[in-house]
Amino acid sequence: MKILSALGRVRAQKGRGLYVADDEGMLGSSRWGGFFLPTDLDHVYMLFEFRRVQEAAASRLAAGRATPAELRAIEAAAETCREGHVTGQRELFDRGDDDFHLSIAIASHNPLLVESVREARRLQRQSSTIGLHGTVGGHAEEAVVEHAAIYQAIRDGDPEAAAGAACAHLDNTLEDYRREIQRRLFG
Image (cartoon, rainbow, N blue to C red; front, side, top):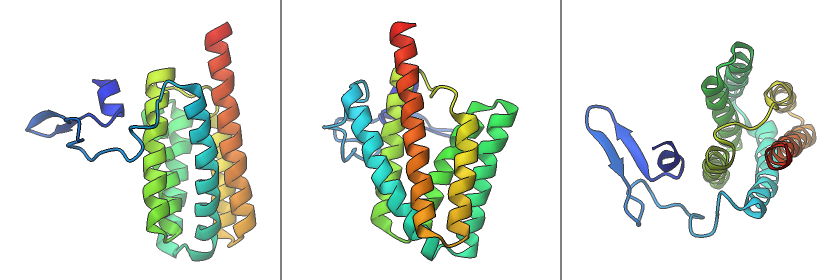
């Protein structure tokens, strides 16, 4: 069920049960579902490459466009990540991480970036759930610090620092992912 859920093929409706999507995607067809293979390392690396571009753009735009309410949402999401890490609650960390990246996209005021970030995060969850059983190495502590740097640059209205911090975060996350793959393959 966990894998089907990560693939966007099943959802639970409170009081109504589980619903499994048909080939057309009752839950909404994946734009990239026919292309992206979450178990293909080349595809996973391409996804990181794509995320680096989109998240740098979203952060750059958010630095110039974020409203006070959007800044609070970004800060709250970063705090949720930190709390999840400190308390060892992986689900809380993951929720905060998703909210953090989506809040930045929302603060960019570009609906295309919002949807592409949402879709890329969904694909990232697929590859993590299938390939790494829901874990992405030990990058959580560093991610908390990197999220704070991204938030500060956005809050300070510094587009280039925000984009640079986002790129550094994605580069470090990819490197952690590679290390975890190496560890699993070669011990």
